[in-house]
Amino acid sequence: MRKKVLRKIFGKSDRPRISVFRSNRGIYVQIIDDVSGKTLVSSSSKEKIFHNYKKTKTELSNEVGKLIGNKIKKLKIKKLIFDKGRYLYHGRVKSLADGIREIGLEF
Image (cartoon, rainbow, N blue to C red; front, side):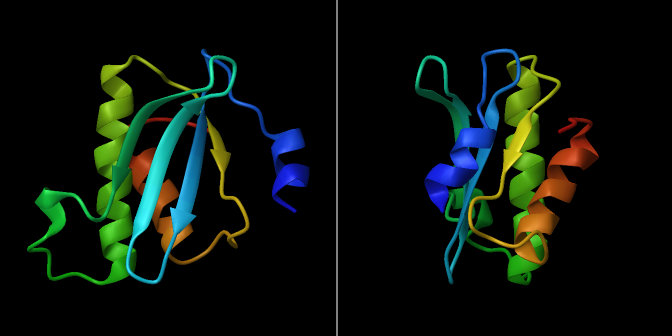
């Protein structure tokens, strides 16, 4: 299934791919340039700034989206490709995407 999705989704240097991994305890995001095979930026809900948050996992995902959005803006990237992987687009994955969109990026 993963290979089938990756055939359609391919990040380039001008429009990198947002890869999402969701576990029971956290959410992890990477911005990947598939042409060079490098991770440009990464973030997760396990970073130190989120240790004292008393929020739900969905609200925390939105905050991670805002954090990664600010990191992407520093790289002067405006457009992205969203790769949700095997996860349905609702709940924490949707909240993450909404957090990225709130910063002003589009996919």
